[in-house]
Length: 267
Ligand SMILES: NC(=O)c1ccc[n+]([C@@H]2O[C@H](COP(=O)([O-])OP(=O)(O)OC[C@H]3O[C@@H](n4cnc5c(N)ncnc54)[C@H](OP(=O)(O)O)[C@@H]3O)[C@@H](O)[C@H]2O)c1
Image (cartoon, rainbow, N blue to C red):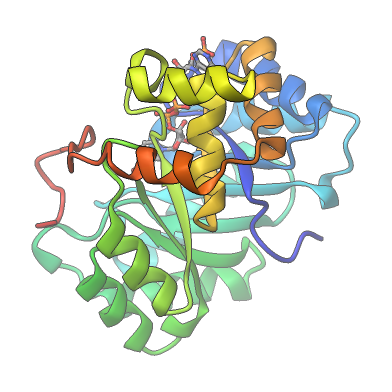
């Protein structure tokens, strides 16, 4: 079993079920050992198929799923995870996250955590964590009974949304940061600063972006159904940026958020 979140994962948001299984199998073939899905993505069956179709042993793979924000009552958390467990059909799920905090904190965090602990006892999941939690919400979650079990806070980070305060607060609380939407919805490919740094190293702007995140001790999720992109993205782990590159990328931060659903917490 993998005991900590692998630092580079394949995302599957907005990837239709048909393409998902193939994308998962090809990523595993390339060396990826971490796949991120969610109940909300409606592709857990395909993710499970992609894992079963690969030659990589199940115990070498870390699989994360998420529970939607309208399923956060204790019994609903368990029901959602029973369903995810069934759809994935790969045995115990490695990690399950609260996808978004309960809007207006209607469901107390402690109640949801109790649901995740029930799911652990039933061997539906091994670890649990949160996503899109602000620093005060994360602190509240960590202080709830069982809250110390939280292993990650997954939220949006890109060169255009460095999210520095939340990254620092999360790391200070001893919780691993996981980044989603790292390419700023495609903007990274066209950014002149990232293009210049990429040229200097003979790599791509996407690879520079991922290397910058990894240099901040952040777990990266990148989504691609294209095996060539998957391979390039995976290889970004070999890219070494210098202090000048990092300074230039840090300066791109505009606090520009792409994920802005109406139920998001007050950032
Ligand atoms: N917790 C949350 O609320 C939340 C929210 C959003 C996302 N997530 C997770 O985080 C993952 C990553 O976010 P994201 O899906 O926005 O990922 P992303 O990697 O920033 O963007 C994915 C898009 O970039 C393209 N792409 C990837 N690598 C490329 C490359 N090397 N060259 C050119 N294009 C490339 C992909 O197209 P191709 O397929 O053509 O390569 C795809 O359209 C999601 O898939 C999901 O698992 C979580």
